[in-house]
Amino acid sequence: MDGKMFARVSAIVLIAVAVTATAVEMNRHEAAPIYRSVDRPGDEAADPLRAELIRCAGIGEAGPRDPSCLRAWAENRRRFLAPGSRPAERLPDPPQSPHPTATIPAPAVPLQPEEVR
Image (cartoon, helix red, strand yellow):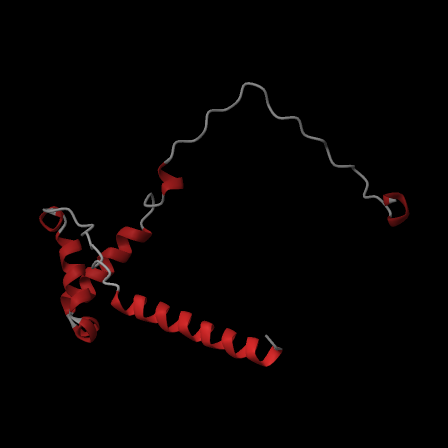
């Protein structure tokens, strides 16, 4: 087989493989993704603010003009930014070690540039 004939046969085989792969992919039926709700039933009754925030998120552009949404967002900000709302502030202080850590005192006189080397 000479070079031209080999190139033609290779091109035909490549096109046939591409068409076959396309046909197989087009005929594949993927299962619909399963979406599970992260909300637990009864959460809205336990926290009416959460239910109001969900309602405000659902009304779209009318949310910033709705007075109850503005109140709900202000309350949510207050809860989020309140002292003690972050985990580091809720954790107890670590117990003090009976042995203090060793520290190296700094020199009393600053070193001159020639002494640093």
